[in-house]
Length: 366
Image (cartoon, rainbow, N blue to C red; front, top):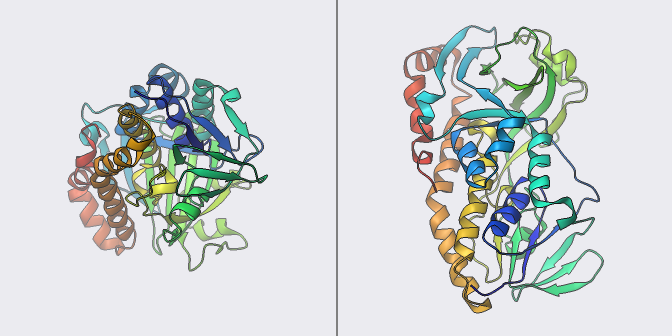
């Protein structure tokens, strides 16, 4: 293996996972982050079986076990809390891996500790990426790399310059995410309440007496935030959880479809490449898998001239799996708009089969 000069733009989950995966194969990479300090958005994460497996494959299983909370069951309800379906997560994932939930900040801290905070140059933005690998930073300084890994999220600067035609597409949904006390709620159950107008309310215990909550609704525009959005969910049986949503993180939902674009010196991973709605909870899983597969592929490098062919091999290995996830997310999002009486029949009789089908191609390693 010949040493490559590699830059990772972004020190979120995807970027840190990539840095760690490369380091485990003896490959060094520079990491830059446009924010001046580590910035955590959102509140919590549900990590299904393939996400847990990927983090274990990165050698982080013990740390993950210490900071996460096991999830054993999934339950679907209507807005009044009446159960439509319930199933054990093992019915979906089998022996693939356990399912857990955790605070987003805890996963970010876990990865940052694994990498070492001193390995990240904070407050350094990527301004431009040329086809020869020359990177222009926010302060005007330039440096040439053999490979630039864009792990800088939905509004990726690397994607803007390497693949300007691949713009994020607003999905017509907005969300509010927050943490609340878990008193009186099931300890190991993922629960989603489904209402009309695309409204959903997710509740997932993350341990230490807290639950992660995510409310979502249809919106005509990314900034479509009602004056008091909590009133939109007044008819949901949330048991007072909305009382703790005063500081909820607001986020419009986007889809990015840029994972199969070609560039001789740049590749996108995580949300920069394939952001989608959270209906399948696959963002962390796909980011960690990207990191693992990319590190395995780059371990075959025999010099700068081999990078374009290796990137083509990486894209080919990941493409079918990522297309499957995007397609399943779209199907699940469409199901949010089923009439209530249809939803009751479908989920009461076919929920387990639907969930298995949604995830069947994710049971094997990437």
